[in-house]
Length: 112
Image (cartoon, rainbow, N blue to C red; front, side, top):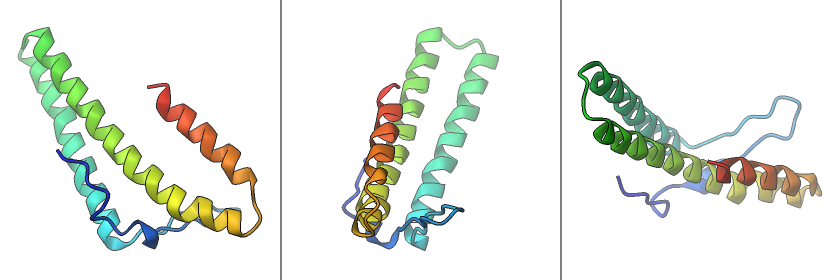
């Protein structure tokens, strides 16, 4: 699966700073994320099936790697939208703590 952020309308996403934080993605972005996650869900079910059928371990590991890559693509898409909208908006509002939050988020992603 190709990872193409240029075709996404990431500027339509914004996050609320209120007590209940939410992101507001465009319908196009939500549909893209949902499609990707549905595909990943199918990959997970496929991996379970490979295990049930006693498929060779290396083949299963290859499928797990592909699934992890697909999840990373979803995370990258969300991270870019978050940076371009939520983080920028909060900085413009004078909330520089968002930078520390963003760095923690990146550290969480890089652990994997």
